[in-house]
Image (tube, rainbow, N blue to C red):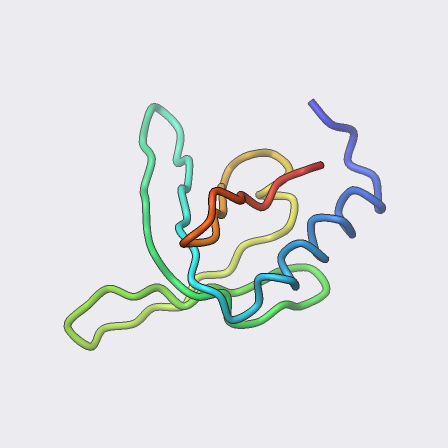
Length: 90
């Protein structure tokens, strides 16, 4: 487990910024073996959170927000579509 320093969170934030506008796959861990997989596009990057527009088909869209600590604690895994690269702690 990583010690969450400001530098670690800044690294995660810069990795998310590099993927701004790209399509990603989100795997969210909801606990008790509940994992949801969604596809979307990283829409905005803010100082404490980032937002992802989820494509649900049939003209329905949803925006979800996540904090950088969600990636640090592995509550959410973000993978860029078309690559094997996941946004994670280096």
